[in-house]
Image (cartoon, rainbow, N blue to C red; front, top):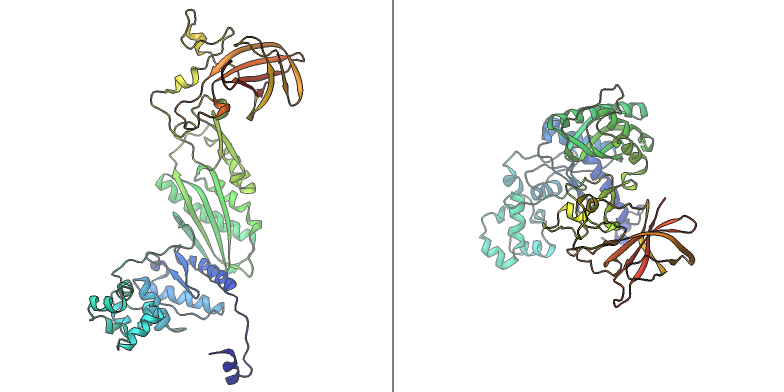
Amino acid sequence: MPLADARSFVPGLLTAAAEPAADAAALTRLAEWCGRYSPWTAPDGSDGIKIEITGCAHLWGGEAKLAADLARRLTRQQITHRIAIAGAVGAAWALARFAAADGRPALPAAGAERQALAPLAVEALRLAPDIAAGLRRVGLRRIGELYPMPRDALARRFGEAVAHRLDQALGDLPEPLSPLGEAPVRRVRLSFAEPIADPAEFARGAERLVADLAARLAREGMGARRLDLAFLRVDGRVEHIRIGTARPSRDPRHLAGLLIGKLDTVDPGLGVEDMILSLFAAEKLPAEQIGLTNNPEATASGIAPLLDRLGARLGLDALSRVEPRASHIPERASMTIPVSAKHSSKLDCHSGARPEAASPESIFQRPVFMDSGFDPSGRPGMTAKKLARKPPRPVRLFAPPEPIAAAWLLPDDPPFHFTWRRRPYRVRRADGPERIAEEWWAEDSSAAVDALRDYYRVEDSAGRRFWLFRAGLPGGDPPPRWFVHGVFA
């Protein structure tokens, strides 16, 4: 009714402005808190929560005890509630809103949902108001009255919505539940008889949970990559600690150390009554040979424990590693990827696919450094040792290569003078050229700076050494351009 009419009935009525955004956020937090019962939880509309408890009820001693525990905890938080458990989402929705009451959950036996739904109003089928009103006008007020009705007649009069919702409520049509967050691969839970707030107790709980999870991973030959430790507070809030590993791990001491190192970020509030450790990413981890030492860090994992500790402090996204790629273009020969990413099983070229005819040997050995020039046909006197010799590379590459103004005499000669960053340099010594052609199989091989290149190692009058290249052939149109690609130590 309008507010003015309500105040005429109750003069002392207390009112408050509606806050839909805050209500939605509170409902989401409550759905997350319900993760103690199942990892598959989600808000349902503006006033409900869906929980998929298939395979979870036995952990609480059955559906009735699970509902009783949920009701007890909600009552303690002063949350009015109605609970229903059924074999289909539609049936549970209808029973919770039209059959259950606070303190009296609706728990029909398996297979008895049809009889439990029959006396409920047709609005319990989640129908649009106009459709429900149309059903009432023709005398169909209860769900049970729709059971004997021909589906064709209902569809002609009210559309497909009535039959669709009825089949969903009876479990004849599937209705998937999208969880609030990512569903974990494995999960272990630790409940406390009384709420705790001591960080030392949290540390012991984390060690116990990790030990239980590590034992399961060892039996399955798996290793953890992403873990989430949730602290379920008595006030309905959930605190999280999330960690990742640079490589799969099931070392309980190492994983527990990463979690314990972040306990200072947890606000226990009035106390924590449950801790849940969820595994969100796992990979195969076969047995490894460790070194003959008493140092626990000196294992086959190498630098991974250090990366994990840094990642726990800074985040794994802040750490990266360099990984090679099958490309003879210098700036494409390696790529920087996060340490949390999987190691590639094969080297990918810049375009993502390498032709079968281009073997790794031909890719990396075709550019040959020679003092007298480069001839792709191979002149007599070029020994295999000379062809296989890899020219030196600078310790620093510029990305992208920086343009310079250069002067040279003959087509294949190195420059005798160049200007870089508005500073002139006179070349005293030079080696080259080393010719590097574009990758003909790459989609973007026609880029100007990636065209045919002739590289030179040059040393100026002050002893500084540079790696220069000429893009394009002398006498071509457009004329060749010069770049500095790196500097030597």
